[in-house]
Image (cartoon, rainbow, N blue to C red; front, side, top):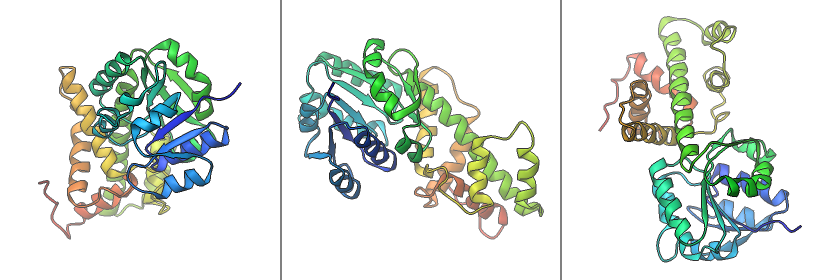
Length: 303
């Protein structure tokens, strides 16, 4: 049987890796430029074709995939006269692989349903390297029959593919996941920075902590930079981390509660963004904490 045609929007680090995987698996692929040409040109060289609007891409595709940075970016590609929804074929499936606000996801899902399509949210875990190997964690939610139809495609992209319930459940779980991850990451970065201030070797702290129940993959990602000098073992930027923590707080407020534990991570990441560190990797927050603790500079104020 021939494979379904796929349209892909958002060829950043993760999206471009997913596109390479899709082409390796033999899927006909149409791509759309979002911010730069580099990854689009590479995808075209690998056999993809280019569309020049989201509407055109949707008309060519059985499945539309988006891997964008914010809900606003997803909405800008989905709505409008040249958006995905305007060109969607009846019965087509749309998958948002990014980390979006659940309320926005549900609203888009209703709009897609009105033109005969199905919208699913399927945020991702793991790294672009895992994407190239087809070993992502995929947290999908939405119509279960559509999920079952898409499962072979998702299995080509992911090692662990979950169906989590009604539309928006995937984004809810991903935001909770990223809240926990970024709180842990920032705590570890601060711990390494306090070692410097108190005269303890970072390696000695890591040896003790990693020998007990605190040991985790996130600890090792932060150690990779704090001790080994490798910033991108976790290829996730400070700016994206701040965005996700903000989305988590927004989601909690929508559920009628005020998050307590996200406050520290939100403050730290917000200060780092205000200090011009948005493009750095999260593990480099160790340097930011060390700078604050050094006493050489005053703590930057958020604007």
